Each structure stands twice: as structure tokens, then as C-alpha cells.
Image (cartoon, rainbow, N blue to C red; front, side, top):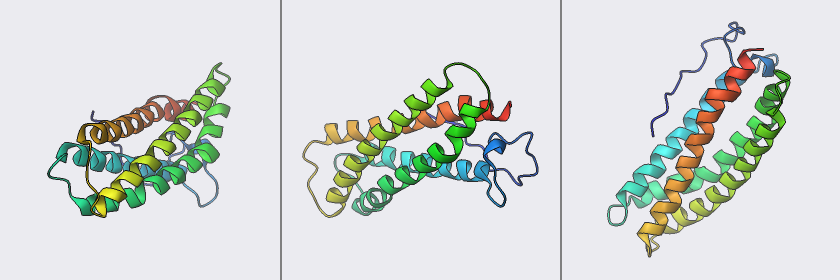
Length: 168
């Protein structure tokens, strides 16, 4: 699944075209932060996909260590930012019914993704430290389920959340 990856805004003086202008504060540019967060998460998805594709016999254990160490903290950090800055701007951007329901669903996805990321991180760190891959099919499924969920979440934010904030 390929998602078009937009470049971060060059400057925040384009508030009419910035999808996150409602979340801006002095010297803080959430549009750039959100773009950076999406890029970071999509790079992690690409890494998870590469690991899944390398199963069972060509796994790069160093890559498992690298991804395992950064995955769960990156997810927590990005979700905290979204829930504190992006979702409130989305809810306030218009009186369209259902926004609160969408935000509640997105937050529940965050929780599920963080739990899955913790499990994946633990398994990748174990493999990176020389652990055996006892069930490559199950591990591949676990990795693919996580990166596909993350990509779908990002796609929803890009297609619905950011444009809704921009349209206000």
C-alpha cells in the first residue's frame, strides 16, 4: 500500500493552506510536526514490511534491534501530539456531527496500535539479540497487521482530519 507523502510546509505564513493552522501557537508549527510524525511512522512501516518480507531466513538482526528500540516510543510520542494538538483542532473545526465519534475511534486505534507496537518491539528486540524465529508466519502476520493499521490511520488523517481543519 503506497501513500503519497507530502513535504512539510516551508513556512507557517501560509495559514490558509496549512491543514493545521488552528493548532498553531507562537513558534510552534504543528503542520511541520505532523508531516514529520507521518514520515517517521511511514518509515517505520517500511522497515516493518522489509523485516516481514525477509522472513524467515534473511532477517537483519541489527535492523530488528533498531526498529524494536524506536517503534513503541515513536508511537507513544506521535499519539500524544495528535491527541493534544491535532484532534482538538479537528473537533473545533466545524459543527459537523460525528467528529467526536471519529476522534474517539482514532484514540481507540492509538491504544490498539500502541499495544501492538509494544508486542512487536518486544519480539524484534528478542530476535535482534539472537532469539529464534519459531513461527515466521505468525511473526509476519503480526508485523503486517501493525504496519497496515498505521498506514490506514495516517491515510484517514490525511484525507479527513487535515482537510477538515484546513477548511475552517
